Amino acid sequence: MAERATFGDLLHSRGVSRRAFLKFCSTTASLMALPAGTATAMAEALSAARRPSVIWLSFQECTGCTEALTRSHAPTLESLLFNFISLDYHHTLQAASGDAAEHAREEAQHANSGEYLVLVDGSIPLLEYCSTVAGISNKAMLVAACEHAAAVINIGTCAAYGGIPVAKPNPTKAVAVGDIIKDKPIINVPGCPPMPLAITGVIAQYLTLGKLPQLDHLGRPVAFFGENIHDRCYRRPFYDRGQFAETFDDEGARKGWCLYKLGCKAPVAYNACAHIKWNNGVSFPIQSGHGCIGCSEPGFWDMGGVYQSVATGKFGDGAKLGAAATAGAALGAGAAILARRRKAALHGEDSAEH
Image 1 (cartoon, rainbow, N blue to C red):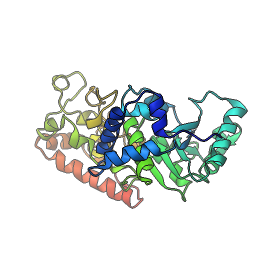
Image 2 (cartoon, rainbow, N blue to C red):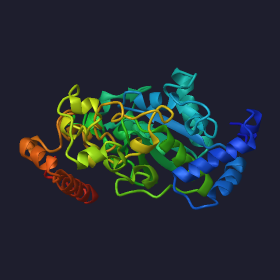
Image 3 (cartoon, helix red, strand yellow):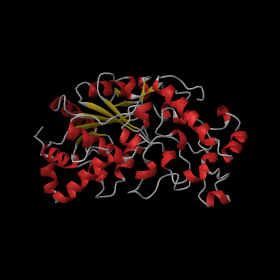
């Protein structure tokens, strides 16, 4: 495998100015909450860095993670993702197929031993016959690809926590990547699908500083998953005042009132949707009129119905809590539920509310 050009050489050949590149580094450093002055150091480090080989493995998934990434709008940060990595293997995006595709993966593993990154989307079935690639079970391919990898980045909730495939009754005995790979640095970038900016920021920091960003107790980068969606949501004032939409077409919905009673899981979800948003910063689900489904959280599909409030069903009497919310008590109830869930997740226990 020929020696790859540096990232700086590649940008120059594509007509990217140093000013534009510095702007990219400044924005990335800001998003990752890195110290002042990091942008210049990042620019110098990335300019001299050789593009790392990336092996992207897709297992039990819907291709939504790849779809999200390819919906980037140049010249946004995510549009540079494919410029500063060497994507040597990806089922959906690679031109090669059959034996040639699998040969590319094997060559990338051997030629870049100890230096390449493994990106995974999709859960792994322990019933190995449920999903194979080129006659190789997902589990076997994952173990082989990660053996000499520098780090593993889980793209999407399926790879990070099992996602929809692990939901009850889990017919394929699906597990997350971290349930199999125990001896490599792992970072989770969950979401169904995840935000492209989070993926870009993680890789940029890894190339610049040679280490993964600060992670929370669920292995997620704090810069993107350190804040509750509910706390950053523009509908939060309506929640605090007890003003809720009761249906998707009532007066409250038309006035932009809180969607909590319609199943919004924002009070128990951590992600950057509310302030980074999607489609080049245009919108996010709650702004578009649909409640958050909590897709960045473990076990989100078993958290309750998409249109069922976390305050109903197993969580208690919905009518009574609704009345309490109107009086302003729902904020405390939501915080208590969130605290119990995060404590259970931290200790690897099943929350009584699940």
